[in-house]
Length: 604
Image 1 (cartoon, rainbow, N blue to C red):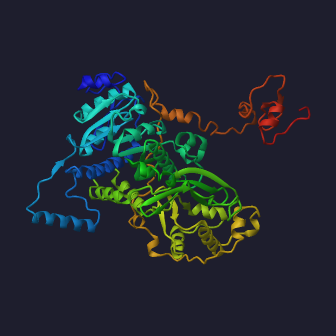
Image 2 (spheres, rainbow, N blue to C red):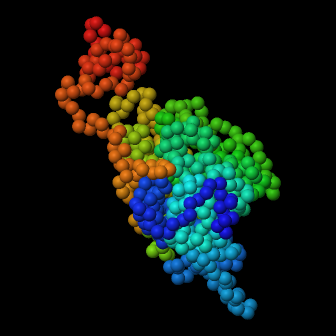
């Protein structure tokens, strides 16, 4: 009841109001209509519609699998028949139906559809609900749900969630909570937990792996890509227990960092994860993992993680597993891993290595599950506004090599040796001709995922350089290009384009890497209590940009701009030393803090 719900909450929620308040607008997404204040009191980003559509599709298939074990059949509007993944499955299903009819007919299955409360359905928690848009969409678009708890620590957000639940007539499914999501642990277990915070989800991961039920689904978004992509490795370690490095494969490495962090935190409670789908899109990453309990399986955790040795010269990388496991019949033996896999210097260019990780080194996806989601979305394209993009991304995911972590990029390989860039299909064909497997990656447009070692990669580039020679006399003897090209290739690469070099997602021209949807489509400003900043957000962005866009040509006007590289000093130590801009500088500060060229007067 409402009275019992208020007793459990740590903050008092204001009574909901169903009418529009002054300054409010209605935002429509999917089947939901959400009330939003004009000020920035509650966070909302319309670009993440793809994120919410994909989450609804994944939870629907997860509910279909889970409720089938409980004797329930999920009905999705727009689906005329059950989605069949393969012809083999269709044959098996037909055989099963024939066998049932022979045994005296079949009993009608109990069905559940969207919008209705299912007593044996899934319990869903949106830990950081903000406006409640995602929870309302779950109630209106995902079948087989018993309850949805929309939680937010902000009282303004909690009140808005309650109003949106009544506005969309889903109060029978959606419950409002106003608690700190970091401390809701084993007391309330949920089948699905969605974490979509502003920035890093690190403070909430520990509680999430405890509050999820056995075999439950965790849906987690990370938008702190600057940290996870290598700009701040020490911060990444403090949040996720892994050091990020700047490399071409940084977006896939970010996925593997969050999976490593999840597995590490789950292992503390004798639990382990099973990734279903992991995607890197736009300015964020999104992972869907199941969590299980099992002390024996948790012992495999060390062998699932790996350190990354990345060459700073040529970009070659090697993975070093953290642990080793060997099977002896039905028994599994665990031991420490041996290494490192590289020497003090890179064998290809002679440069040093960076050490990153540890990262998740196992597959990022469950291909069978992804294929079911893809089939459902393709068979019902009118269900989501971003169905075409979901189909394109998931098609690429199903084509990725599962056992080839990280990737190279063709443009970076060519840039290293200063040669022309081969066509993507030519380079893929060369790897296939050499007997190796190759695929694209959804995380980068010109990525190459392959099981070929770096020596084969550089042999192919050496063969390409012979057909497209560079000017060797302009290369420094200490440069990576000179070292790489000084070695003769040990294989003769064939760049004739093969038919299987072009994947189906590329042949069908699916929407794989769409253009920016709109101006300023990236992360939005953080919500503030009381709001008041959303109206002039673009003006604030411009305030600190292009200050000298209209550059002054008059030298007298330049003296009005003080030199920003130096602190203000007393008038006794100032000297007019710069004839370029006429700024007043101190000689000691100039010597210690600046590495440019200035002209000094004789007095100075």
